Amino acid sequence: MALNTGKLAGKTAFISGASRGIGKAIAVKLARDGANVVIAAKTAEPHPKLPGTIYTAAKEVEEAGGKALPCIVDIRDESSVQESVKNAVNTFGGIDILVNNASAISLTGTLATPMKKYDLMNGINARGTYLCSLTCLPYLKQAKNAHILNIAPPLNMKPIWFQNHTAYTMAKYGMSMCVLGMSEEFRPDGIAVNALWPRTTVATAAVEMLGGDELMKGSRTPEVMADAAYVMLTRNSRSYTGHFAVDDAVLAEVGVTDFDQYANVPGSTLIPDYFLDSAEDFYMKMSGRELQSTSSPSEEPASAAASDSGAGLSTGIENIFQKVEGLLNEDMTKKIKATYRFSFDKSGDPDVLLDLKNGAGSVVRNAPADMKTDVTMILKPDNFEKMFAGKLNPMTAFMTGKLKIKGDQGKALKLDKLMKGVQSKL
Image 1 (cartoon, rainbow, N blue to C red):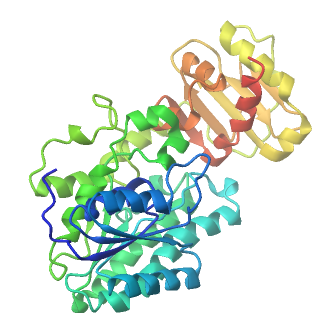
Image 2: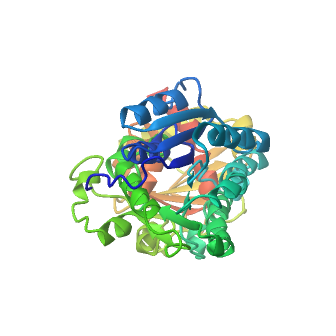
């Protein structure tokens, strides 16, 4: 990306969730112009699993040439947001830019998303974005070339973007709907309201927690979003508003052709992010919807009558299921309440059904095709063994196409504890 233009020198940007990841990258990018940056986030003390605090981010902003105001802010709390905005205005004299970046994610199905998780995602993503916008708008109205930028996807009303994580999609689309409505509402005031979304997964702490090293390898760095945000925030707010932009498309518009510079691991195959038409085929294939031979989800209990000696299973797979049988108990079935079919892609190994819904649970080897289950997992034997041995993260396997899931993805995620139990015995 070309050097900063200096257009944002002296401008004040309020950025939620700016202690790490995309938010911090945008903060540092704006600071290179000499901007004032309000680091609005919850992390004041170092987190054991997540890098960065509002103070370490503020230091990076100042080292980049900007002025920083670190503020401990929970954007679900109205008084917390109001106090931080008041502090920003008292310190810098106003607010020119709002970046609604803070977000919570849980890629779980409805039955695996209790109200606590639902409220967290909607409280931060949709409500938090609305609250920060509401609180900053009186000051944005007084600014020249004022911008609100939401890190949110285009509104793509296709079932594939809802079926496996309805609550998360609702929460993210809440941020997108703020763009749809506010861009028109505040067009007469000259306040631009736009959305920016990545073409690929972005190498952030959240992505690493979801998919581990493999997903990080297929990601771009946060700088691709920061550079695209900079382009959008330096445009004329009266003529550029109401857009749902994608990072690399924004950069291509200003002549960027070298996207290899943003690869987190050069040469790796990039993994598309959710919600884009260009990613639909990828995720359709990953979800197994093109595989017509697998069973459909059902609440019918599995029958153990079809069980036999396990003939036909390769040694590694049989060894894992023997370990699984040693872990089964009624407490586990009461918590999980689901049945799983494992279909070993093009290997010759017969299907295996894992019943974690009835009694103390059971393993059904050579499971007949007409035995219906809640979840069908299609994967190669070596990936199955790696997954249960802890060498392949299930989310990474899913995101990279090594694992295809048909049925309730939320119930699929419940297998994690069982896998960890198996790992302790291997």
